Amino acid sequence: MLNQQSNLDLMFQALADPTRRAMVDRLSRGPASVSELAKPFDMSLPAVVQHLQALEASGLVSSQKVGRVRTCQIEPEALSLAEQWINDRRTTWVRRLDRLGEFLAETEPETRS
Amino acid sequence: MLNQQSNLDLMFQALADPTRRAMVDRLSRGPASVSELAKPFDMSLPAVVQHLQALEASGLVSSQKVGRVRTCQIEPEALSLAEQWINDRRTTWVRRLDRLGEFLAETEPETRS
Image (cartoon, rainbow over all chains, first blue to last red; front, side, top):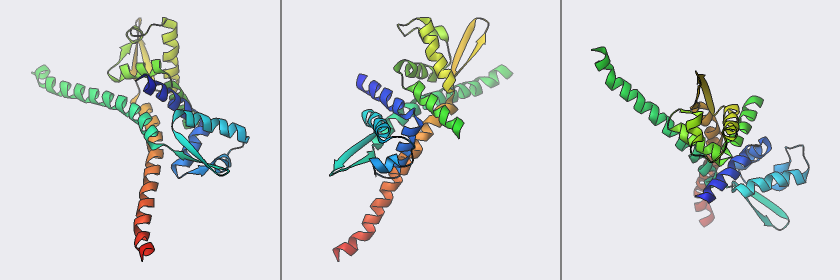
């Protein structure tokens, strides 16, 4: 539970930056090397690597080095975990509204009579 | 677009803290006053208010003061926005895998012959 909490901390932290979200967006369309990932950004390679490390630490991205090329890929299960956390709270809220609506609909005829 | 980017920055930043997630979780079950929200946490009221301000700045929570009581509530559309961002990327990835699977299934007989 504590681990999942700190995973969520790191995941949401990782997603709170536009460069890192752009990297996740790129990787959602397929794996990419570090230099391919760096291409669209006007920043140094070390800065790109630092963003990648934050994504890897959160579990949202993994990478593998083959020869001299490090290839990055998205980890959909980690994305699911963050998505599910938000979805659960939103669903709880929507269900509460539905119950409130039902309650009001049931009590309405009595208040009218 | 730029606004939505900075909204997502603030939303994911707001969700990157376990106290703030616990507040969102509590508010998903219904509106609450600031003191009700503060109750489960072993922290000063100013610290609680600071977390609430981060949640309000992100748009995930809104509050209204009536008399001396400030009541907080969740903003489900903002939650939706953060959830949808993750869902879109995850779905893109899953569709890519599906297409890859179809491609492999189609080319398999040729490689066998």
